[in-house]
Every structure is written in C-alpha cells, then in structure tokens.
Length: 186
Image 1 (cartoon, one colour):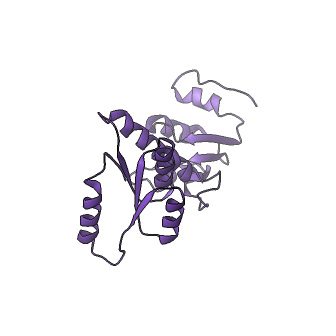
Image 2 (cartoon, one colour):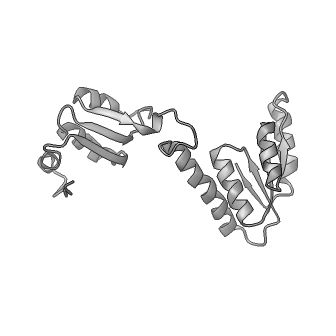
Image 3 (cartoon, helix red, strand yellow):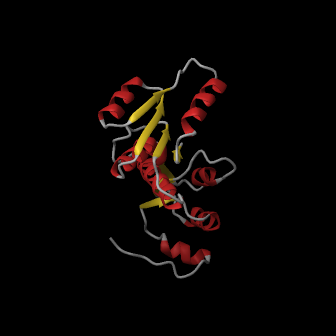
C-alpha cells in the first residue's frame, strides 16, 4: 500500500490523489464540498466501499457516482445478522447503547437505584450489559417473551408490553415503570 496525502483543496490536487486508484475504502462519506470534488476527479470504474448513505434524502451523491461511472458498495445497507462483524449498523448500535448509559451515569447528579431500558435490540442489549457491569437494578421493557427469559437469567427484571394494547395504553404502562427509574435508555 502507498499512503498519499492531499496537497490542497484544488481539483488538480484531487486528480493527483486519485490517479491510478482502483479501490477507495472509507469509513464514512467525506464532507459534502469535498465529496463533490472527489466524485468529479475519481476515475471511471473506481470502486468505493464504505458507509455511503445511499438513501440520504436530498443528496445527489449516488447520482454523481452513476454519472461518473464510480462503482459504489455501501456496507451500511447490507442485510446481515446483528452478530456478523461486517454489520456496521449493529456495531454502531452496540457502541451507542453502551455510551448512552455511560453518558447518563456521568450526568446523573446522585446515586443510581434503577435503570430502565426500553427495547432489547442491539442498542438495548448493549445498554443492558453495561448496566449489569455496574450492578444496577435493571428493568427492560420489551415485547419478546424469549428475550424476557434471557433477561431473567441475568438476574434482571423485565416488563412485557402487550402488543395488542393501544399506543396510549402502552405509553401509560411505560410511564408507570419510568416513575421509579433514575435513568431511562430508549
């Protein structure tokens, strides 16, 4: 591999940067003004792989890829199991769940008696695991009885929402649970 540095923000510098490049790997799309220049200077047939946000409303970047014959693979749109290491969204959700709880702990002014986690997707499970590490009394609000068994096996409490109940009824049930919580992660 060769490391290349961008000498300046002029289009000719981008052309030099992307000369004889076959594949561009990136974690995330660049800032939009830079992306416009890149998409005009990357050679036809170049492959871009990364979290490219192809469904972002109001952005012309995917049309630019097509117009400039850039081949784009957006890894944030792959349908993968949450445990698959290539599942970018699951990995970000794991980080977000953990950080949500850590941030709430940091901002909470006094001791924490009870944490309520609403939902038990990837982010909820990550927040749950972090709460267990801190030995907090933890309750998870969910709709899946199989997940309830997993929560109970960890020594935590759960509340199964009635999926047939109206939204307002579900909101009232959640409200009654949150009254006792110091921290709620949703």
